[in-house]
Amino acid sequence: MFSGGRVLQIPRAKVEDAGRYTCVAVNEAGEDSLQYDVRVLLPPIIKGADVAVPAEVTVLVNKSVLMECSSSGSPAPRNSWQKDGQPLLEDEHRQLLSSGRILQ
Image (cartoon, rainbow, N blue to C red; front, top):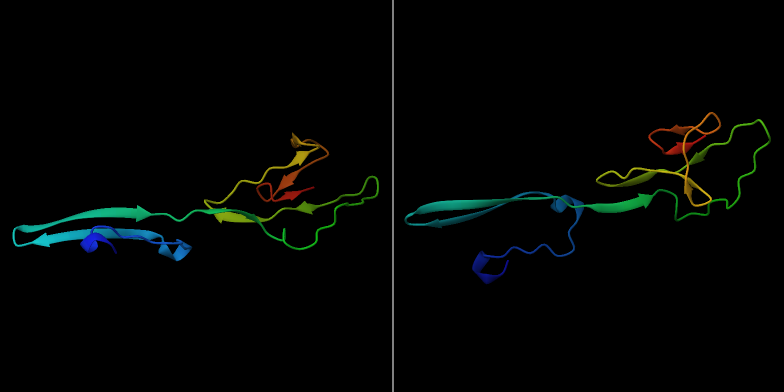
């Protein structure tokens, strides 16, 4: 805390720092308070991105292939897929499963 308790600083916020913070001012004439609801956001992280993933997937014609992209963050990220840099839409040949986490 700084300035006689007037400023509360949380350096390098962590998820567990999220919550309701209340400043209470009290003197002989009474008291007043101010509340802050603090949310700590996490950037999207694709699980497994730090391990070797095959750069190429081979599938036999008329067979199925599954590609998984599991992510986390706060708020929860939405997954989407692209093919050759263009948004990939579902059709009879492509299905998005588990809210976009798996492409079949």
